[in-house]
Length: 199
Image (cartoon, rainbow, N blue to C red; front, side):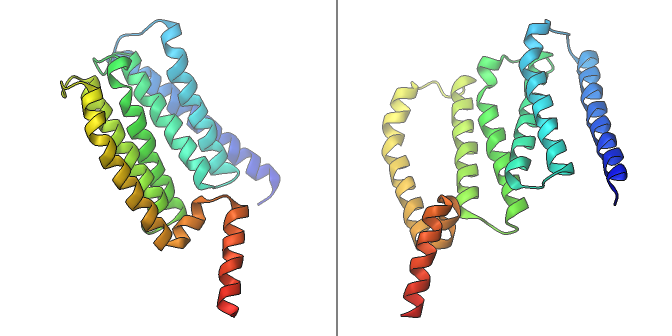
């Protein structure tokens, strides 16, 4: 495909993403109440940053990190817009843990782009983010009335045990460990494994 066709396709993609953004904002204007402009700066910035990363992912380079950024920023922008336009009748102070949960869901989805099957290093992190967000959401909505400090004192040792089990499993599955380590360390470990195989 020549450069002229690629450029026109990219322009079409950008226009399409812009139309989706404007259409979504118009739906929110009709469904909720129009807030002050200063309230819309954060949701619109997140939304546009997400669309910019989505454009980069679709048009330039398909990487799982770029997909993660695109999904996270876009969905956080959508959720923040729903709160700003009062479509969700709760405050940002009450609903902030949902952003952590969105990050966990987006991490899980972007891991599927890189790994078709279960990936311990990504999926465990995604699950932990979702569970932590859910826990904080229960506190911020007032579902759990016990003081957070009391819950933290009891759950702290449990989290240490779970973290230790995770590290032991990572050690047993060295391939998963090598994926999350920096390249210099993982290359050195791979080199040691190759030398042991030769012996």
